[in-house]
Image (cartoon, rainbow, N blue to C red):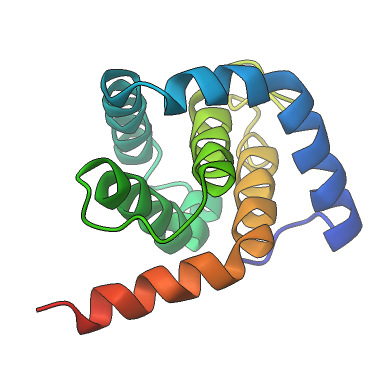
Length: 140
């Protein structure tokens, strides 16, 4: 992803997002039903903004995080920690929340912070994501 934020700024954004939404992400992660609703909202928003170039650039990462959460709750793949699960939920939650650092309706910029938070999430759990993608490639 070629975001307009530096690595340091992405980490700072992730810290702010954690302060804003970590408790809510923890509550959601504890409920299969709430996670299901969140995944529906993420999928719906992803379809609504599919033409946005910034979103197109990040779609692969978003879809990977969605698949990781789904596999976890289907008991198909649980090779990551609860902390990682909460971080996954936090990244997806931030993507769908209307109140974030740059409002989504600002043309050209609205999704930069959402996707920068997702990029920071993916960077912080790169090993878990690589393991998951390997598991997907090798499952029959």
